[in-house]
Image 1 (cartoon, each protein chain N blue to C red):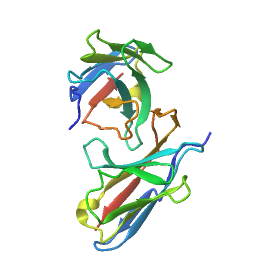
Image 2 (cartoon, rainbow over the protein chains, first blue to last red; image 1 turned 60 degrees about the vertical axis):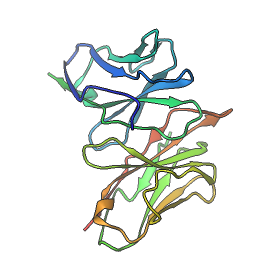
Image 3 (tube, chains in turn orange, green; image 1 turned 45 degrees about the vertical axis):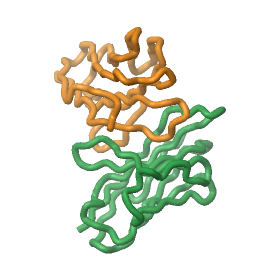
Image 4 (cartoon, each protein chain N blue to C red; image 1 turned 180 degrees about the horizontal axis):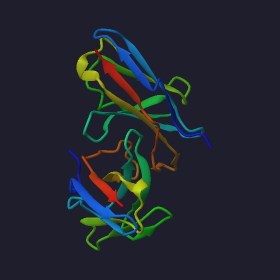
Length: 110
Length: 116
């Protein structure tokens, strides 16, 4: 079973920030939080990951709470092309496979 | 640069037939993964290769499924005696491994397998 809990769906207006929450209350000290997204009919795409510090890259920001039991993926200015299923995954640094849940289906609307 | 490629993009086969699905990982990526995705579900892990050897095949559903990576690059997923329940999108991913640390996985577009 996936170690994370995400809302099944969310809507966001184009140009606004999309904030996608994820609960991972059983995360271990050496486990990372990874975010991937899957646009319809494509393979999943890596977005960002973090251990305990907040992270930012050209795609998104990742905010991890101090107790590491939850995190939020932020898309600062959502576009229609950001419509996708977003997966939050917890995994160790040396673990091979990713355990996907059902993710959050984000719909960006004009 | 070139990403992960998978062939064929679509495969329709009859129940009971044998199929092979191919994956070309990103050059230099020593880790290769196979996942299966059914409609409305997230990808489900099947098998993971580190180099030529299968490091973890715990996700293979039964002995009809087998995968190889003989030279540590291209991999083939083989399914014998296909069943209608095998219909799904089969995804391949690869990643860099440095000093025991797995980096992010890059996925191919998948092969859609339909068993009639």
